[in-house]
Structure formats: structure tokens, C-alpha cells
Amino acid sequence: MNTVFQKDKIGIGKRKRAVARVFLVPGTGTITINKVSGEKYLQYNTNYLNAIKAPLEKLNLTNQFDIVAIVRGGGLTGQTDSIKLGVARLLCKMEHENRLVLKPFGFLSRDARIKERKKYGLRKARKASQYSKR
Image (tube, helix red, strand yellow):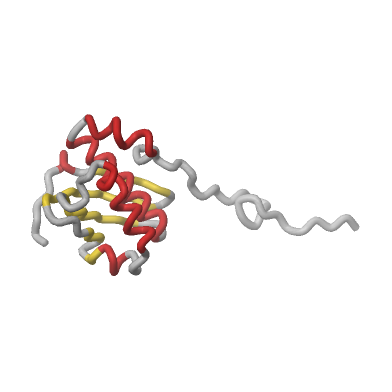
């Protein structure tokens, strides 16, 4: 796995606290996340695996590219969605016509929902201590 990747052939995806750098390598459709097979890294969860492959399936490129991703931060759901966004962005960077296919399915939309910060005087972002009338 000593492949050198070019900087212009990278797709970056973000979701919650997860940041993914995605590379597409011509191959057979395998997924590698942080130098571990995708099935093992995502705990054999088919929903996560299908979500990552979804942009490729819409373009009928499933068995033409291997997905290599480096992910930091967040949990498995955030990491999966960040990889999916990175794959979609990279496909658009490779060929501009792919954008017209992927955009209606929402693959190019970044989910902006992040954890709300804790406020002073409260226990969490919105949770307050119980109110006592007397």
C-alpha cells in the first residue's frame, strides 16, 4: 500500500467531527479505510458499505474503482457520510458531467449539523437543572 497519491486527485468530505480524505484508484471495487478493509473497519455493517458505494452505483462505476480513505474524528456514521461526500466530490472533479447525475440525489450536499456548544449555567447545550418553584 505504498501508493503515492496526487493532491489534485483527492476528495475531501466532512460530517459532524469526521473528516475524510478520499482517493479513487482504478481497481475492482474494494474499500480501504485507514489501511484496513472497509468491511472490517465498518464492522460488517451493510448500510455503511452501501452508503459509501452509492455515488459509484448511480454512475455505474462500482467495479471500476477502489476507494481508499483516510478518516479522522467522529464516529462510524459521521465517517461513513464524510467518505460518501468525498467520493461524490472526487467523481465530480474527475468528470464534470457526473455532477448533473449526483446532485439530484443529494450526494454533493454537506450536512451542516454539528454538535451545539455547551452554554454556561446549563448542564449541556440546552439541558438546565430542574426548576424548583418553592
